[in-house]
Length: 324
Image (cartoon, rainbow, N blue to C red; front, side, top):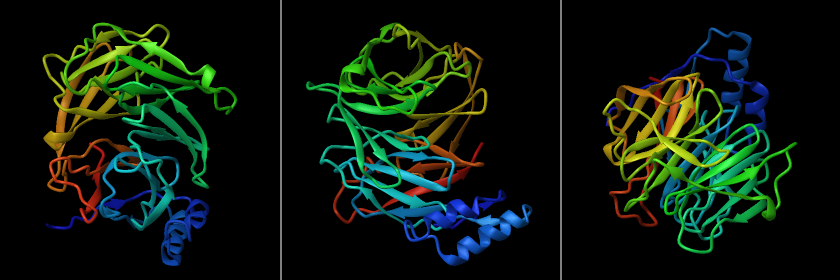
């Protein structure tokens, strides 16, 4: 496969990368290059456009914060893998509980982890890998699939049950189990066979949430005050196999269509009652990507390889593409 060089034209934080050394393998040369870039903003750094995850890892979720560090969740055992976007090297940050880790989000202190068939969520310290809190949302059949952070909560989707789970976040304090919100979804969304609510994002006006229903390809706007859903007018388009969502800027939404090996790029109105599919982006390196995170002008997608029988030696990778 032809290797393409993607150039990153922005200066990174030398201090941040210095802190990565010895943790995810940022070499002295990379730190020196970053320091030169910080001194000379017009200079160019080259990041790996594709890098490997551990064999047999079975990735699903990805999260990237302000620094060039990515976090990945394993469907196999729930381990969290931390990797440098500068070198592509990494390590297991947090050993899993034996149940999946799916959608992830990171803030200044935490990684919020969706627990899939475990029916739960975990909050991990991204510096130490220590589990700070665990929340058992459901003891029956469930599939806690993805998470989004708002100004005052972390909201998780359940692809089996029409409900959102909310962790109220106030003054950086994690809630107790008694404070967990269970928000039934009503209105336009109807449960069907297969994966229901999957990826989740915020609307441009920041007043509501967006969820994609994988089984129907429909996009819904959710009022987090009462759980009422309204179908977003896509102008006749359908987000078949819709998975991870990422909103960028005021009105751009990226929707990963996993088994179609592509990303739909949508333009939203402010309230997200309407959306227009502007284009679809694909890449020869895609192998059933599940979700997407961004760093500067680049999108990163882990290849889940759902169509490849998994085993302990099955290779997995992450693909970077320019932001459309």
